[in-house]
Image 1 (cartoon, helix red, strand yellow):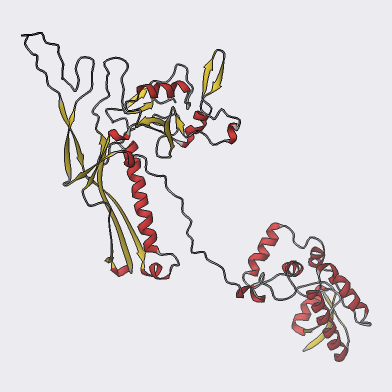
Image 2 (spheres, rainbow, N blue to C red; image 1 turned 45 degrees about the vertical axis):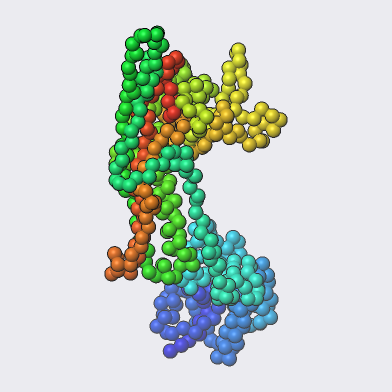
Length: 446
């Protein structure tokens, strides 16, 4: 049986002072707790009260937060003889103040809104912030009509240009291995080409014989591979051309791998890098007395240039981290010094830095060791580096739908066979002066 009660203590959605109809079984406990009291009110008045309360709630939801209470108070004043409580709950006080207890409260209400449970504080917050009519900020009010644009442009980081191969001697190979004859020329203090001597012979005198020393450099093709699986769905549905993407990125990555090996690899089943310590012709310049760790000084650069064989073809290769050291090099003059690399014109540091050192091109690359390690700065004549590649073959590409047919995947395969190594078998001791090499570095400065 339903009876009419006045709410004395706010509970649930009911605020103190409002009048409601409750079932006797529910009212019993509330009466005992002192939360309600029974009132006698005719049905017409009760229905009228409900109508007024619904209208006031509608006014509250449509009005701006600042003016909502004034509208409700005005509605209350227009109804006499009915006690309807407005704005006395703790929740209403919270809304009238900051609205949310804190950022965590706000985030939790956002989370609930995703489950279609919009709290009153969030509803008022959104109401104050959004347009009154249809808009794209709220999905149900127009946002669904605005599609998300997906660009067909794919962002990718470009790789550095090749350093070694464009400057090296490329040897086409008709088989998996090739031996190339080389003349030994390690020491010119008494002979040339490992044993050739030239004499002045008097009339009737006996001629002296001599001969060059020969050796061989061997290149063995090793396989460089790449493999990629792509589902049929991605090939069919992607706005990108996945096949074109794979066929562009993998060859680029293989070129990058080759250049890394030509510079620094140890030669075990791969090319022997020009800057690797296993290169028998590499020449490491001794650091300066008292030189600090992770530094490059102008004396290092001058001595490297002096000891480089093939200066007219050589290029400098430095790690990006070495730039600061190069830019701040100072040539000592008395007790002071002058900068030697940054432009000395009026533009100062505003101008582009020099692209050369001592007239030879400077290449900054991530492929060589960082500053302080041997190889962070090198001066190399890569025309003295041999690269072997299978003649007429180049990069082999293939695709197959059969390898993973039961997975609906297409396999893309990339294969390249190559080898590389310096053809100098040692450094060179000239007839006069210090040892020279086409591959010059600075020893580690730890």
